[in-house]
Image: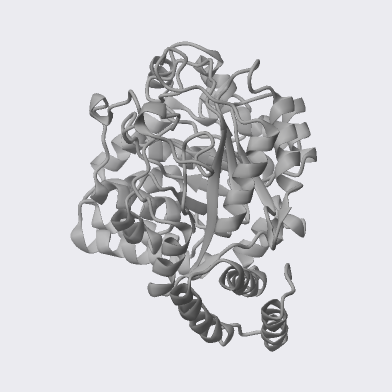
Length: 472
């Protein structure tokens, strides 16, 4: 039985409900009246159901498909404007006890170089990231209770927050580690993490168990119910994701929207972010082994439909995707991207050779952070290094209420401009600085509240004079 409020994985991610939704969508893929009705509802920007989303994904009508793209752009603009939040992953350790067939960290891979950063090595990596200009990290580690216990993760978080180098500081540490206990989530919350991120990989239970044949990750229910335990442990910003290409993309889209509906129904707070990675080459992993590859066209539609279905969520695309693909999906829904990323353990201090590879996946977009920032400025986006909501306690339902009401723009727009100004003063190339200063002048005028606009201009001038870390 499908029960959105249930705590059981197979009830809030119910296979029969997904299959019925997919069949319904297939039957109605050319039902113009129904599709227009769904789009009219979606135009209220309060979201649509997983079944309605399945219909939009399946839609074959050219005019309506164009409307889907147009509406996704409008919703993205309504909730996130032209701000793009910047972050970088930091891989702490690639030791792992799981047997995931799509990940080179799997324990049977004997030729990948295993590495775990010491706290001193973490310090060097963070200094390198700060010297790029990053303020927000997502830490990653394989699942290994001996090499990567929760105590190691907590110590690493403390180390990262404690590093102040020149004008640099990591102000938000998001955490992407394996499913764990309520008590461990409580400890992560007390350590001051931002978002807890965990990718489902696939919501299809049979496929999930086949893709995770050995190790603790084999337990579908324990993994799928992890966000509930995180919420119970006090973490109210959680990030969902599936790895598109492992299973049928239609099934995964319905599953991830159902997961968002579950969190809304049970906790009143949906996912802070949704990530949309596609499987890509990595060490001993060949994407050609997986028969469910997602084309660029379908990928763009997936992004559009998720944006329409879950309008409030932040959407993330990583450097798995090429520059060209990232450009296409930015205005369809993406609000966060990584820049200057390394997916190897210790890769920011010293880039590895192929023989010493410890990467989780190959990076397609290999540009520096400054090149990515420059590129965003050319397209009229505001590269944002803002972490203010997290540090002001605007998380969970407090953040969502401000976002859904549209009031968050009074914080986000000036905070984005102020953190961009910090980047321009401390890290940008001359060309990037010139473009950024011009954009800041233009975007200050967009702020409609005169008090906020005046204060933001004052803070920006203070940043120019050498002061740092202003926020609304």
